[in-house]
Length: 248
Image 1: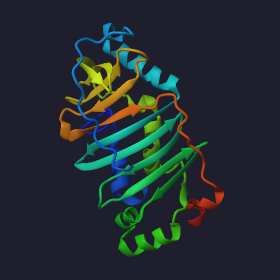
Image 2 (image 1 turned 45 degrees about the vertical axis):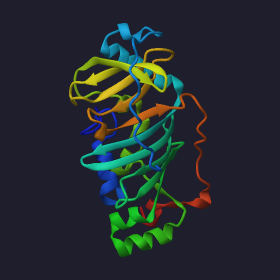
Image 3 (image 1 turned 90 degrees about the horizontal axis):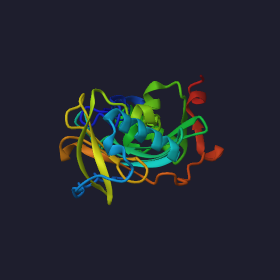
Image 4 (image 1 turned 90 degrees about the vertical axis):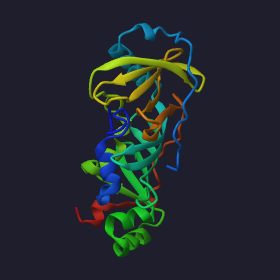
């Protein structure tokens, strides 16, 4: 629903932003398979249509106002790891595209967007010499980037619940199992064979896990619903405005 291998998860442009051009989490680890549950019960969504279950999962996530999204996925042959705290439209965390491509910290707060890549990112995107120069200039500072930069904006798109949980085909019901002790039902995306979104069937109908058809495809787990995730803007002294540097 949102990737080649896990359409529920990450936009293709996010991988492009990381792997190419200046629009590029600690290794989060793929969520482990959970034990099968005998029968989902509790909040009644298992008896509803797939579309209604998806609608309620979106509503529950929006109602929670904040959550964490963490895991590893394979995107067009690239291994991506991410650990993001999301609160409304605000985002903070790390995205890594492997040892050769480096890691970029992302921060969106109050309508402003910032990135803080490591040296591997800069050298992979700007070349060895220029990349080292940029990395030295940036140090530990955040780069403020324009929301009009479509490539970079893809790094923050996971904060859009409708976009994150939009299927590419017809949604049907799948198996049941437990995710971290919570009974859950799988929704299958007909447009991405084998991709699953696991939705809690007890308590709030939160989306709990997105995963691909094969364990090699990885997965992304949701957690920390409704918690204060501590997202805050960086100090002004810790920010370099890229547009001003470019004379825009």
